[in-house]
Image (cartoon, rainbow, N blue to C red; front, side, top):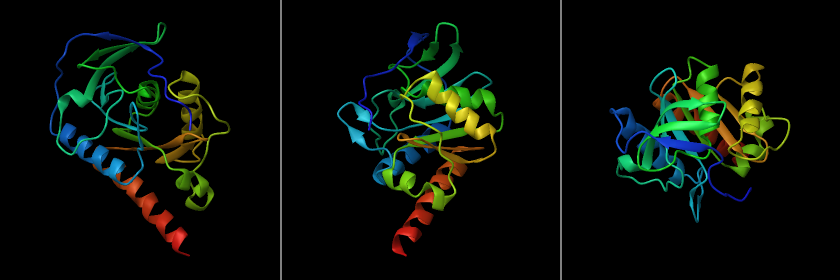
Length: 201
């Protein structure tokens, strides 16, 4: 797995607090579940994985960079992205920490697919190994995390129609998307259940 070196974009913080609703508790719960299932492995600087939900045309709430999922909701574990200055690759945010290193990926998917309401990104060597049997499409080549190139590869694969709810970024991790948090979480669990069925054969 690629060595984590931090975020690869600039942040401009517009405040330490942000508006949120009951969806934040749901996102936190799913982040904790995915971590417990080993789908967002913990490392020395946080966890390999990130989750988000859309809050507006150019805004979303996402797990912070370096977040270790907790069972209890801690608002400081999340960041509100208000908008992106694409030319300078600068996120305007609200919160007490930088957003996830994969914020570019989440932002790009929301901008491209109007019906995407939540995204969950995790890492599982077993899911990738059995991608063909699970009918999950895989991008053509490995690309560094947190980059526009990685986001573009995800968009291209999703646009192709090869996969509508889950794809795999080659040698990196899976990306699931759905209309809301619960749907997206259940998409991930569905693939896990199918994987277990394959492994038991």
